[in-house]
Image (cartoon, rainbow, N blue to C red):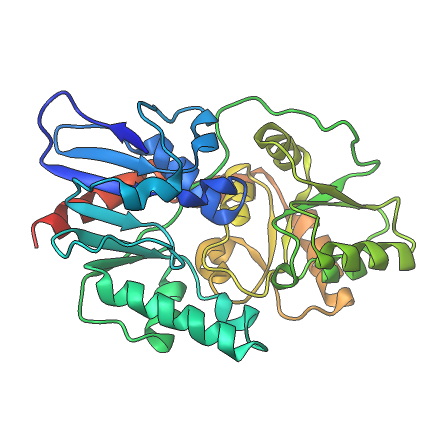
Length: 355
């Protein structure tokens, strides 16, 4: 538990669930980490953060008192508002006087557990319980809002779309120990089926002058599928699975890549998209779920995952990229700010406290 308070008596006491900082490089972990850095004590709000003890190592998080997250149920709450920061939150205060803000990032579990109906039903039940307890719901995209309303029973309560921000900090870039041998394309994310990285490997057969770097947690079965495909297509020298990388290394890859390739099948937002645009790099995306909403008209979209179509779009997009387009990409990314997101969440806390 971390307490941030102002010098004057606060009007609103907000407790925030930052449990997902246990996986800081996941999308939810990045969401928690950047909000924790942006939330500042002021004359109207006092924050208490609940997070794993190890999470206090992150720079920019002003810590005073720390407890393991599981102790949240043992600490008498003094909150006016509790922020459940994701749709799978494990804890909600029982005190009905505490207003609950629920953030929904996606409904990816609907596909993840499609072949496990019991697991899917249990997740749906838990999520509906969170929705029923909420005083207000925030979403990371209009797509997620629309999908949630289609799949869940959302009561007549205030709803807000608050976009995530750019997750590349001001720190220095750090070159990786092993660099690509050719100009390279970059992609990043937990290597799992929904990211659809395997189609990129097939595409690379048609792009002999380029290298592909895949970064992210590579310990699961999908990573093995991708490695086997790399070997079977004799692409070991042109496709690299580099595993987890630091924030400095991530920044280096974005600075030096030719562009981002992101063929994800389902996203609630798509942090890598705004990260690459922030660096002025062309982005090549699937035209599914939230990605057209985040990429806008400046992004390049695959209409199918046929290798020849994907390779052709990449060739065309790279050939046509110029400084004017790089500026347009940076301007697009500037619309997504963690500072602005934090301010919007504070407005939500204030509004729900007054209801």
